[in-house]
Length: 461
Ligand code: S3P
Image (cartoon, rainbow, N blue to C red; front, side, top):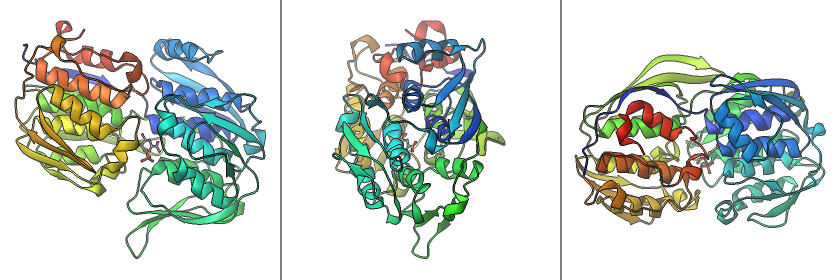
């Protein structure tokens, strides 16, 4: 079994998936021509583009070679090659009134964000649309959005995909969200843009706020405040101040959730020093950064700047010895997509890491608590599942019992499990391969190239 050689160098990561979705969906409902620039976009974002085209919105632009190839596979035609690393989109919105009833089902693929935000976006449109998705999305819960949107006046054929929804005249809502979820909050705010009356959503802890920031940049000033009982409350302005949305001229920052993989890989591989450039550093997204620092990781956020209304930094991470920590429900909201890769870091830390309040992970692209535990066990880590989390007994210098090619692990087609497993494989076996390339393309199409840039060639297959 090979020892992992140190990771070294500087890399960039794809455009933030959450922000890209919003820039595509919101621009399509704005009045005028929006310009969105992004590095690589994954398949989830391409699903959003395909669907907004089905709803009658015109998109033009250039994609870099990798995105162009994926777009063609996804049936998205008419884009040209940009000749550089960027994707440039021109989106010709004609307001919500410009949206047309689709003639076929809207296939959201693997993308829960596309599907849940779309329910809100279509709730005020006086037509019917059927939403569907892949084998994973049809098993995920939608009652969390159909319930509040029904209260506002939309109707739904059921609480799981495929579902047919019919929009129409909506009334306002003051919604006490039972869970801190940016998808739920965003769906209600999008529906609320066209509702009569006050619209607000409160959540136990502030979930990611990209919707609030982008709507505000488009002229609809969303207000956020802490309530006297410690909840986070967001409210739309008065009806007259909500629409029309102004078009966007926007650059999407790098995805912190993608940066998490090289970040943890370098943090647990002795001798590593890696920089990840141009990473979104929105405070509602960077729970993993804070947890890793509590574990003793040597990470620095440098060159802070603001791009498109979002904080952006360059991250520098050096290997250091980690120790186990307790991770609470409040931490989990700010690191909701990073728990599998956090568990990988914990497998290399001294002592125990207890992750609690993470039951939401059971209804992500897979049951991520079960899948993470299985992957960690495949590589010889000591881990057990609890109903709402994971208990990991870490071991600095953890080595797999078998050589890399002999360790089999399942991904369930889940991109974050596939990439967490690949990082673990590198750190525990010394070489990295991708058992599930197609899953990875959901959010990080350049994942292998990113590691190639940090590794001697022989270590990546
Ligand atoms: C997202 C919100 C989160 C996150 C998902 C993206 C978003 O989901 O897990 O990957 O872009 O709003 P929840 O709102 O269900 O927590």
